[in-house]
Image (cartoon, rainbow over all chains, first blue to last red):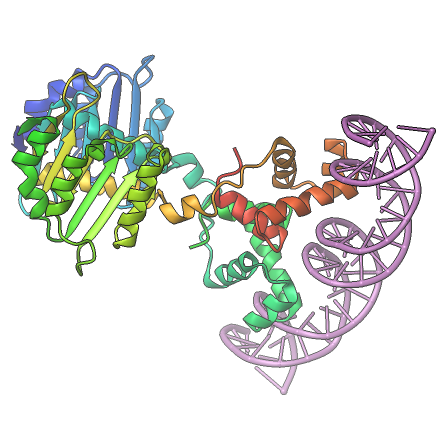
Length: 215
Length: 215
DNA sequence: GCCGGGGTGGCAGCTTGTTGCCATCGCATC
DNA sequence: GATGCGATGGCAACAAGCTGCCACCCCGGC
């Protein structure tokens, strides 16, 4: 079943949202879809209170979703209400929604004109996509972790130091390689450790590895 | 479109495999689907040689796919032919195949009797699932990396040392906490670094972080 | 009892890393 | 030109980490 435009989606598939009993998962690049207040209202109004026991809300987004203040506020509300939000560094479909592992709603790819949505209930499709969603979900980072200390976005200098440390050089060798004095190199290491909130070089390495700061 | 059993899939959808031009991606728990030699032959025989320029083969599997020798051999052949294989720690759909971002084949969930396959060409569905696949793919580890540098399975002692290091303690503090002399503690650290093939503590931390040896 | 091996711990000497202090330099501002 | 600020680098003292050497202890085998 295919519907065109947000209004029609709300009209034709709104009851699916209202009927959610156990799980509401959503993968999207950003929150633009629901940027139209009417659409978002219409749907979130129909949804269960997130706090309901046994009801799980999961949103998987890209960093793009954190771009504007309004979106961040909305995400804050979701997590406050018990929903879980994660951020994936990989590109995501424009919008994928799965309800109770029974119904799936996919937005069609970028196109001029009103957006199209495809609603599917085929168990094979839904469960397959759901599993794929979980695989993507498992490897994404929690919103809180992502926002807080995480990703201390390092500049080129820091990256260079990181690479030298990761290569296993001694300070002397690394400093020479980077054209720095040992003193300055060590200063950089100390700064790096500070931004990673690490007490030892080992800990710094651990953090760097966990955060995938190698590439 | 739905087909039952591998034989029917080959008969009805074999031409889709043969028609692959650019990309063949596949997410599955393991390789059991093609365990029947006839099925695999019928399909791989129709496929392009993997080496063809611009033709990409990607297989995303769970560690279960590495359980038996035959599967490992098959995967070796795929990589040798230029295909790319990655391992995901997250559970995966029983089988999802996407060809040229145009056709998608999903196996239905576990059920008695012959397996059912659903073949879809809806662009919205296919591109949505494809993006989801990429998100899962991006965060999976390469087969080679998974097999080689893999999990130098540490014993409890090593884990304890790892935790102490990760906590940022000095050797003195850590040794006291573990009820060891500083000398022995350092011996342990040295051993750990050896098994991680690290030249510095930082490098050891990095490796540990990358390998997810924190939990 | 005696022996040998493996793990342990103390010691010492060395390397490496950490930090404060200060002189210097480049640069932008006044 | 003078002033001030930030980054740099040399130096030194100290802390931390690394490792060889040897003594010790525990255990199992002879």
